[in-house]
Length: 258
Image (tube, rainbow, N blue to C red; front, top):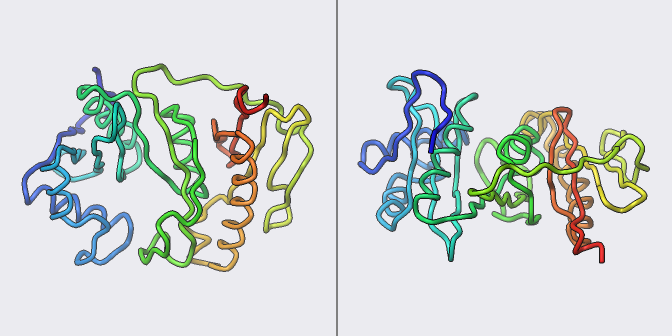
């Protein structure tokens, strides 16, 4: 399997203690936690590797510039516990995870991400071709890191078919659809078409910055988007796309419309 990566970048699995400690430090940097309390301590990473999982690290020259952790799940599933990379390297890191999983007979990879982070949604849904298949309310409970602190930890499950081409979904006509919800900023938050085939939902431009500047407003965004998503998912919708200007497309499966 050919991997798409920028020049000068190498990606390899890490198993040694020093390499895993460097990955743990990298995750501390990304999630803004003390180095003594990383989201994934080196000893945990070592245990996951020993149990058959994989830690992939991306190096720009000799500089650690991205990392990802995956474990084998039931049947032909794998689960990506965490992935982070400098800009431009995320796709290469996920493709390395994909190659590792496919070599072990996996067909599906799953992970969770914050649905309010639009850039991550666009990467997962539009670039990789995964679908948002499950909305999880306050999945992790309180989180004390510098990225999520002060918010509730709702997550969207990304389901990625590793062996099929990225699907092409109908996006519908968002602007022609009636508005159904208003956002905390007073503008339209969500729309739903009259044929009941699509829902569109908007997220803030920079939820991480908003959490730092106005945690109460960020939490209002959380509750507003949660209402739209939980209602739509209960009726058989899945998240299939994200635009550059921060609008999700949720599509209703034919089976759910019956």
